[in-house]
Length: 148
Ligand SMILES: CC(C)(COP(=O)(O)OP(=O)(O)OC[C@H]1O[C@@H](n2cnc3c(N)ncnc32)[C@H](O)[C@@H]1OP(=O)(O)O)[C@@H](O)C(=O)NCCC(=O)NCCS
Image (cartoon, rainbow, N blue to C red; front, side, top):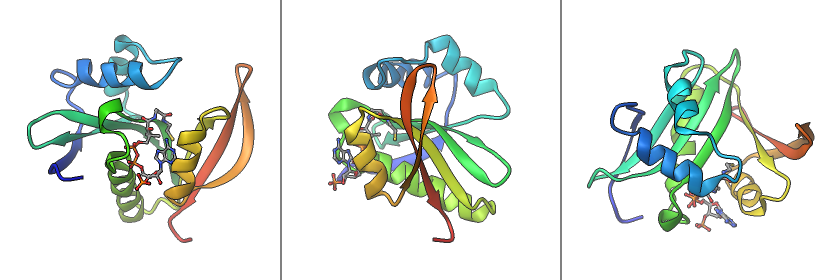
């Protein structure tokens, strides 16, 4: 990716609309603006965004720090910037954060039909562990270990 990128925490006053637009473009069962706002003020959840030097948010990650791991709730890149390394950079940022905060795992669920994201997870060093059913939908549970 040529454009210079910065990763920073979500600002609910300036970033909500753009993150919501990316969310709607990325998930068929998307979080509403109100749900994203609620997550952003929920003390158990973190949202980080990646923006270009011109101030465009191109990707975001929503995750929960648990006792020994980070649980990824959402990871999405705006469609026109996909395959440019944005999600990889956000994941690498989370991996560094895991190592510096003594988390041994990063995990998340990917819809069974979402082959692109499964390939992305594999490519970034995550392993398939099991299939989980949530509200009638099958998800593949992936894990990355910091000590691997
Ligand atoms: C999955 C998603 C977050 C990837 O974002 P991205 O910024 O395009 O990913 P990156 O450019 O960092 O991809 C890194 C590598 O993952 C692999 N990859 C990413 N998307 C892929 C796809 N659709 N098909 C196959 N491989 C893919 C590639 O190996 C890629 O490297 P390369 O382009 O050099 O070959 C993005 O497609 C997206 O927003 N999807 C909708 C939301 C979603 O399903 N999220 C699930 C979270 S796991």
